[in-house]
Image (tube, rainbow, N blue to C red; front, top):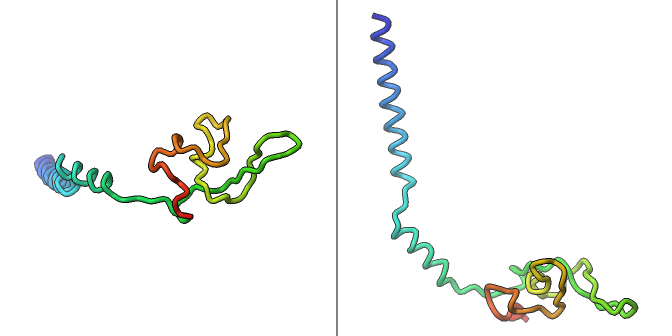
Length: 110
């Protein structure tokens, strides 16, 4: 008798867990059209660089003694991603637009 009660209890628990799992799966499911719609909204969003959304934690100063540009702490109002090559070895103090994938002019906020 105890064995039968235990089996019934296990079946009830399994059914409840199955229903909860199915409910959560349905609630958090997105269709292909939902994904494409959200991607289009992101693609069509008009984003313009401004001082508040630049990554600008370094500035470049020319050292007359070494005849090289040096990276210093501070802001020069140019996004750092347009000034440092992906390999981190080359600096472009005025910004190089080919390094900036989002918009050609990253200094348009001036």
